[in-house]
Amino acid sequence: MTQVKPGDTVRIHYTGTLSDGATFDSSQGRDPLEFVVGSGQIIPGLDTALPGMTVGEKKTVEVPADLAYGQPDPNARQAVPRAEIPADIPLDLGTQLQVQTPQGQVMPVTVVDVTETEVTLDANHPLAGRDLTFNIELVAIA
Image (cartoon, rainbow, N blue to C red):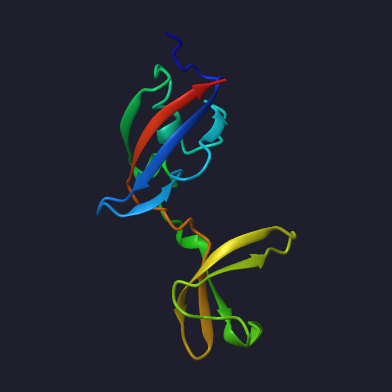
């Protein structure tokens, strides 16, 4: 039976959960996720769990934060003068927005604090600092 090796294109079904059991993502009801093993297309802790698996095999993978989305970077938080944000932009805590960097890149941010004069935006990945669990099933090796 063929086993996954780095460089193989694979398709997996997965369900990702947090330490409290809450599901944060799943391929349930969608096509399997397809990627090249070892190419950096998915988080390292999940990528390294695939070599050696065979089609049809299921596995639970515990991924520590450092091998998922990393630890939160305090430098990725920025306070912006509230007057610089258009009035029609919602500023509820937890709201996800997109901002454009001076270089023209679009970057997702989350509203994490709002005062009378400032809005603090966080560009860390929402799952930064979180340990993750994935239940995966290898559907195919292309």
